[in-house]
Image (cartoon, rainbow, N blue to C red; front, side):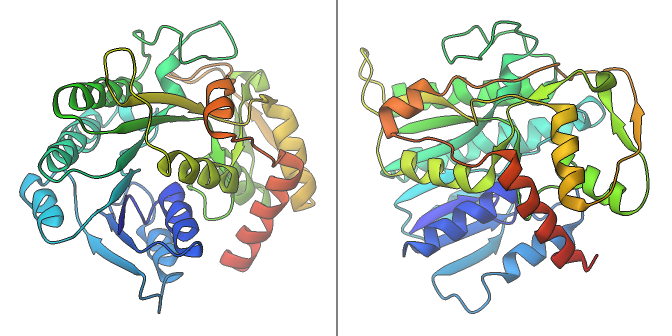
Length: 323
C-alpha cells in the first residue's frame, strides 16, 4: 500500500489516480481544510467512488498521535507526501498555518517513518525556495538560503529535515521542487483557474508586474508521471552514505505571462480584460527549472506545452462547472 498525503489536493489527486491506474493500492489522507472551497476537494475524492483499491481517511498530519496511529494500523510500503499549506501570498497573512502544516506536520510524518520504515518516501518542495535568485535556469546546486516568503522557508526547512532523517535514521527520501503546476482539477488560487473564471464571467484579470513575468508552467500529467518514476527508485547513497536527493521538476521552458494569457483566452474563445498591477510582495519575476538531473537519473521529460495543456484545462473547467 502506498500512502498519498494531501490526496484530495490537486497534485495528490492526480498522483493517487496514476497509482491506481497501474494497480497500486492507495491510502489517501487529507485534512480537507478550507484554504479553498472544500467542495472541489470532495469532488476529486468522488472520482474514486467504488474503487476498493483506494481508501481515504481524513487526517491532519499536525496531529502527532493520529499520524503515528495511521502507520501503526496500516502496512505502508512507500509514501508520497504532498500535504502542505501552499501559497506564497497567504503565508504573509497566515504564518502559523504554514508552520503547523509544513513544519510540524512534516516532522510528525518523519517520526512515523522512523518508527515504521518504508521503501521510499517522496515529498513535495517548491521552486519558491530559490527566492529572488537571478541566475537561471534554477539549479539544485544553487544557493537557497535567502527565501522571500515564509512558505518558501518552510519548504526549505522540509528539505533540511529530510536530510537529517536520512542521515541519522536511514529513511530514504527524495524531495521534488515543483514549478508552477496547472491542469484539470487545479487549485482555484492558481493563474489558469483564476483567469478562466474571470474571463468567463466577463471580469478583468489581475496581471502583476504589468505582465513582465514568466513561469515554468508544468502540466499535471507530466508531474504525476515524474512523481511515480522517482517513487519507484530509491535514491543512491551519496558520498556520506545518505539516501536523500532533491530534484527540480518543471517544464524547463519559462512562458511569458502574457503568452500564457493569450493561449488561455484563445482556448476560452474570449478576449481578456487585463488590469495591470505592480509586483506582489513575496513574488518573483521569473522561474525556470534546470531538470537535467531528473532527466539523467530517471529519464523523465515533460511533453505537454501550454498550447495543449491549457485547452485541456478549459475543457475540464467548462464541464465541471457547467459553463
